[in-house]
Structures are given as C-alpha cells and as structure tokens.
Image 1 (cartoon, helix red, strand yellow):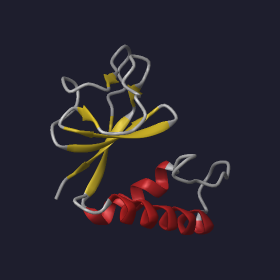
Image 2: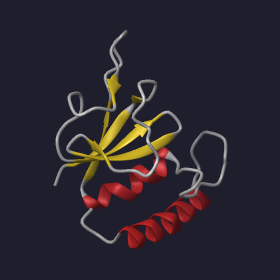
Image 3: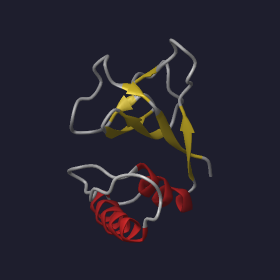
Length: 114
C-alpha cells in the first residue's frame, strides 16, 4: 500500500474491531486480531477503498493455485490461504512466517486495481 507498516497494522486492527461490532451477517463470531487473523469480510471492506479487489481462485475440480510466482499475477497481492493471509510481491512471499509449503493452496487474493 506504499504506507508505513505499523500505521496500516494499527489502522486495520481498529477497522476490524469496529467492523465486527457492526457485523450482522451469517457466521460464528470470534474476535479478530493481527495475531489471530481477520475476518475475510473485514479485510475486504478495509482494502476496497484503497483500490483493492478480491479475485477468487479457480474452483474447477483438480485445479488449485499454489503460492508460487508461476501461478500468481505480478505485483503486490494479499493472498488468502488456509487459516491465514500472506503478502506476496511479484511472486515473492514477504511475510515473517514461511507458508510456502505445498499444502498451502491459494483460495484467492486481493489485487490492486487502481
């Protein structure tokens, strides 16, 4: 997002807490946090005003996206994995936790569209 990491971290945390407080959609309630993860709906709502759109991964039988440069578009992405999100820039994983193992499929990703 071309912004200070801590600024975005704190802003997203506050946004997610407020989003949860107002949530009226289906599903079980659990509080989100940077350590425990954010709701998909909260992260989508946070990123949208900054020009990010969610792209769902293909769902055809036997086809899955992997967390690798050959299968993801270029540029900055926030990938949605099983139980976590990961930042990827031009195919390079930029998170502190190595989630690049084969069992991590990409369910979709947010990509900047403007």
